[in-house]
Image 1 (tube, rainbow, N blue to C red):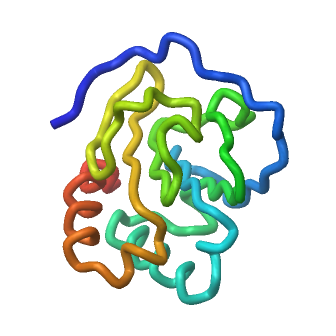
Image 2 (cartoon, rainbow, N blue to C red):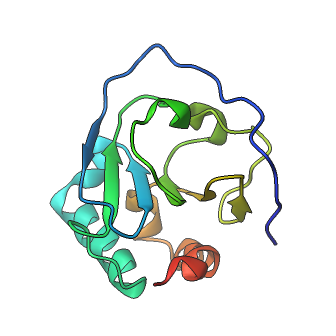
Length: 138
């Protein structure tokens, strides 16, 4: 079930350090901690992206962040977002958003998830993630 919610105003965060990689050709932004970008976790992320017909270097933007980062501070355009391991408020989103549910906002849709590290070892979470992101398949 997805809700159509307008974003009224995203909070501002004074911490503006982050790293973005990738070309983002398909408008997908992946947000995860740098701890989630180990070789093993990156391989799991690539599996997820392969299932969506997305290439990690060409089709997505990868935002690596160790502390909360608000989406209104990101200087790229995206239409889809998957966040691994961040709570909604840490991204400047409404607190009531639940993991593994796709929400549509005015300019993008979002799916919140547990960290890649937790997902790769939990079959139930993998299934819930897949169920919520299938619409992102190109």
